[in-house]
Image (cartoon, rainbow, N blue to C red; front, side, top):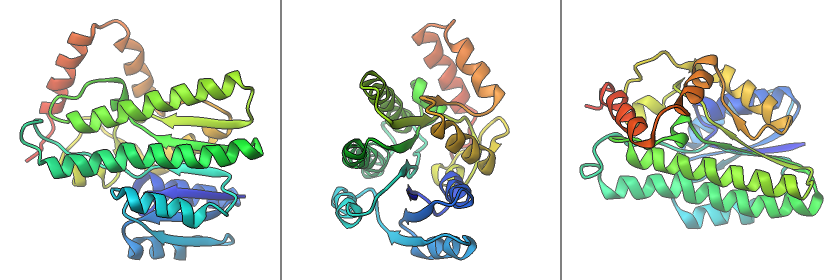
Length: 252
């Protein structure tokens, strides 16, 4: 069995790689930092590990990644690479937002489509797209990130239903955690106002639920409760609440 994991150099992606190694998956680990990937490789025992540096904000590098790996039999694809940009929409640099969209949306879309087609030919395989609880809301002062995760969530839901209707053995899931204790906070330049879950807990939950064919994976009781109560508020009220929550984050 072989797994491909993007954004494997830190956080949830790193912990997913470690957990899949325990499950005896050989790994292809992808991220921009080759040094961090090599560090992870040195920790992984008793499985084959292939390190592939790649900048997923470059559409051409994403296509090159697929061409390089298309002959591999990828049994488990994890689209984890992504980042956030905090600030009012008018203030965030456009280049940062475009890099975010290419990484969080375009790379996920391209790799999901291309590897899904290969999996469908074999009628087997798993795809885990890493979304966020942000994928169910609008996010004033975090607008591009929330919008990108909305795309990931809705795309995965649609593919999941298509596969279910076709009675396919290929399974597609989306992970939608709340705050997780990773380097994401530093990259996005925010502090979360509630305590985050550990990355290893979220990773194990994500993999286990994907293997069971779960469509939306929401680790932790707090996020499950939050998602339930969201049904009782209007979109306008949810957006106002989201704004107030975002403004509690220290983005400076």
